[in-house]
Length: 198
Image: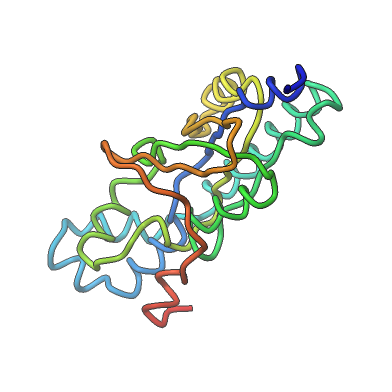
């Protein structure tokens, strides 16, 4: 039988801050600018090339501080059950895999809630790149209690944040996507690696 602390941690939320694939999008926009400009308005590639810049880095640092403050506010009980990882090479799904290993917790996520910029979607579709395996910076995935309050605080500070899933009392890592269900697999190579860009 699970004790009260076990039951409590199974109601934790999985949150994300920032947007996936920003740095990878910027690299793709610079490398394939001519191809993008032939398909989209010129501003799209120019704006995408700025992704992961100073503004995004400042928001990322502010999000990390807010997350740390949130954990400290809720006391030492969170030391074993609050987890966070920065999404980098390998993209969102690699970061999620690392979070799963670190936490040891099962969870369910809705991929439709994962924050992604429209420019990233357009560029990835044109170049046949999977945004979930695209290099990221300035993006956090975390498992925390009382996530609603944290997300509200982040949004109030102008930092993009969203609850994308929740922990469960099972070890499985389930991904939902528009009516389909799959399990989180081992990380795949970063799309930039596949294209020979890193």
